[in-house]
Length: 96
Image 1 (cartoon, rainbow, N blue to C red):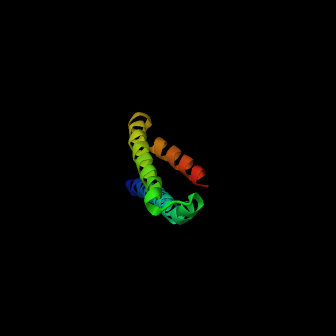
Image 2: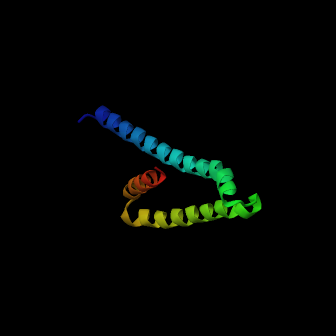
Image 3: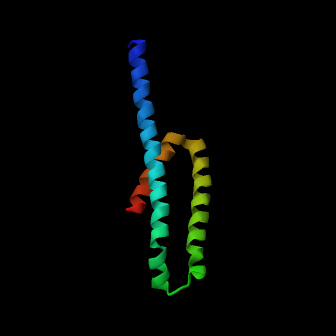
């Protein structure tokens, strides 16, 4: 394999890596957007004021932060790529 072909292969891998990270970021932003869009419906279903329903956003943010820190440690142990793929798959299936 020539040096030019090696550069092309590395460029393709960088493109796929960028696409995967963009998809992961898109899914996280989509999830946050869904929670914020669902707030009025949650508020009306629970017959609560906005100040009483703030715990939903707080609990979601806290849970997301704890899971993020825990999974980053798993990424150090098992490899970032493997944990990213598994995390993205679990997150996507859970969001569906």
